[in-house]
Image (cartoon, rainbow, N blue to C red; front, side):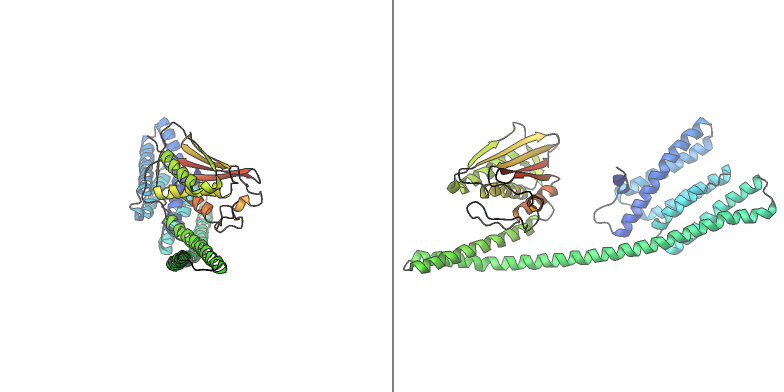
Length: 418
């Protein structure tokens, strides 16, 4: 809960400095608003209506800061808001003869992050320190402190506050420099990864055409006849290798295309989509004589998703179940509503997954990949893609499996509220 409050008004695209500014202002708001409300109540009870009006003004100002955070507008006013609040606090302190240093410390900490320029922060803290030191000076006079001790008492207030502000400024600069260096390094890594992905995508795209040509040529050669058994064997080998390479290229291309954030969202009937996926799997798995059972709820199963990605997610899971099922095996696909989610289960009675491999099955090009029960090739990309698609749409994917006893994948997707 506290993290959500601190991150209020922060967008994913914010730079590091802006994130720290907004978080600090959020923290400042969280710390001060309860005190304002309590003080407002106490002042009203004690008939101190002038102070109650001041508390109401402070509350309205903080309400405005919340508006700024929510709408991402007028953020440059945050430093001025801090100045206005400081003036109000100083005025109240002088009026009520209350020079409590906790207020100046809170404002110094907030100002260390909110002010962009060091000189602005230094000026702010010097004026703030002078103001609160003056309040304490008035207290000394009111309490009839001996004149020869007043200078010493004032220094006891002024010097620690100035040292505190200098220390805050120092640590702010050191911390932000470190964070900015880290952000720069992360951006460089991100650019490098993007460049590698573009190169890989371009290579995969360029490889697909020649591989398709090779597959076509081998089929033409076989159809023409007049080939010896050895030649046919080598033709089969070339075609099989080319098809495997082409499948990997298609996986890479689809992986790159599907990993972008969902954009073309639409209302999808999840039951209908699953029926189509199961039907296609039945047609493809006729050689293995796999039995399918589709258990569906009677409730409306509308979800706001990207159709292509949802189709890919469940096609991956069902094809995976077929790949690792024995001949005449059984696959059960079910959908049910549980709370605010639709839960889809794809369960097979195939070869299962060992405990040591379970933690790695969602990793791209996972070391847990293996051939299917009919020597089907696996590249270790399908489950990784499925997991990312589920998470992109606010869902989750889990796996339950035991070696030799089958596997169940469970996908939870948020339903569309009426």
